[in-house]
Image (cartoon, rainbow, N blue to C red; front, top):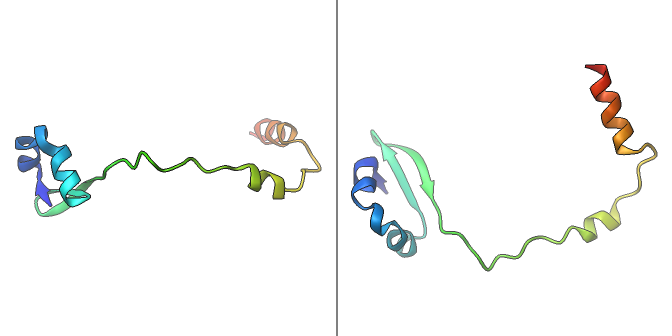
Length: 73
């Protein structure tokens, strides 16, 4: 945890601080205002093919539903 003033003073080494602690909580006046987290680059994007395969087709095309909602406005 570090306050805004400490964060500004250590901006050049935030990467090392995040690596060391896993996350940083930035505070102002003792209250948390931000959280800095590392990016997990090895995380794979979800494959939605299984979800799409389990969905039943709509009886009405989605573009017809959207157009109907827009026309009601």
